Length: 172
Picture 1: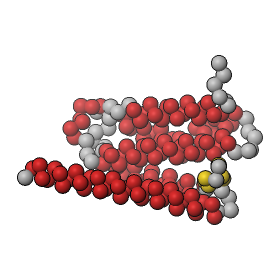
Picture 2: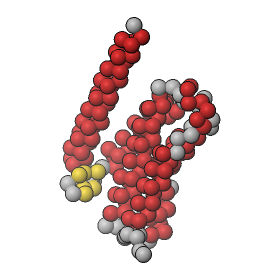
Picture 3: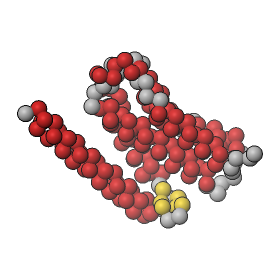
Picture 4: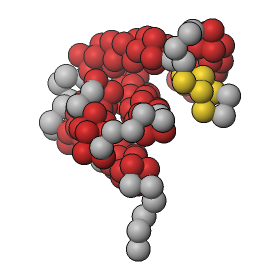
């Protein structure tokens, strides 16, 4: 009986994964289409980015990540010692962290590749003091507090790649 329940649960998890994957792909395609219709859009190789759509994605993901963080509040700052107590919202939280890191990279890249000329110091300040960077950094620190350092390392690598983009490559 237990094996049957496990198999049923496994099938439900696969179905949920497929639903959410479809929802993500659909929302990205829809946002690209909608962004191309806004008068103020930024295009890189025919992929349209609009500040409105980026902000909508940000607030939706930020609120969902805050909700999942609320359910995980008892396991923050305990490391792996509470691994057996991790709630199922941990997956939501991980997805939120990765999505916020991705939004930070998209925002940063659009700022770097804009044709507007500002000093590197002002650009670096603009890339650090914004809602995308601060939220991604905060949530990856919370993820790090659970003992999972992979997402923090991913965030730091993305920052390093953005920094390389600012300096137009690595100079050896």
